[in-house]
Length: 446
Image (cartoon, rainbow, N blue to C red; front, side, top):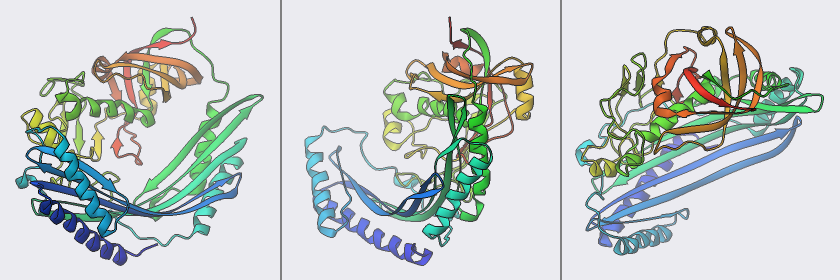
């Protein structure tokens, strides 16, 4: 693995490569150009049945360039980072621009919005990792799952990855940063007579030493798989539903899609014209902070070089901002919000109750721990997905359930949130506790 000093040296070399691509694009007649380039290297180990299965070393990179000429846009990319290949890629992007229609919204981000002071967000932490160490971690996790009562392991993996990212454009912006990410996961299978269930657990962090112990991951995977044994079906009915924190992130992920500029300017969102309107109950606010040190979704600038900023997305239920790139912002006559490339470290507020208290609040209903299928329509807000979880009565989990469908409309579901517990998943970049919704249609047996 490369040291921090080597990665920083690579970063400077890549900056020179990006600058060359920008200069060459100008020589080819481009009015404006932007280049992003990334390089990753890592080590991944997988085991199965407590034996080593694979060891993979990987190192790859890619360069993408977009040129603008008279409001026409052309894009091309290459994984061959030789000077000749990059110049051919620039030429290809320029040829493509000649074939596209002009769009006055094409172009680079406003130069006044670009990040001029690059924050050090402590995203890189070097740790010398050998295949033997990762193998040992994975095997220990598998063995812990077996010791905790799993019928068998369905494999474990441990990974260490380092990367660097550079973005430059013809507004004299050229910056980059390095990062690290470590992770491991284990899948366990539980069995009762002829029925089997599987589940998994994982850990990830910027710092190797901050990963959860392998034994904890294995034990948790086993316990989760065992808890799903002897699952029952339910009759079709309406019930309150708690989305466990692991799937509650998906609920807010649909919200992200609905307020993203691409869907809004195409008029393909159920939250059109919702700025300044109540989307959630007053008890819910959502904060975004791209500058959390060591954050899994932290970044000093977005994919267009715009300075990222902490912001309030939802304030006491009311939508404060859309999520816009420069292009979607121009389409909507609004400025970019610095969200080219996604969102950054969301924190959803809670209603100051534990998970157990949230179950008591629901009294009788379904705790959903798994959702399946793609039955979400961002245009209409229609929501219908296969689900599994647990039936809850008098605030206590009674038995696992499976082969049910939960259905509703996202706009109504958001308004019907009764509570959110105060136990968000620290591994997620979208932090939310479990979410209690007043009522949903549960489709099961007739």
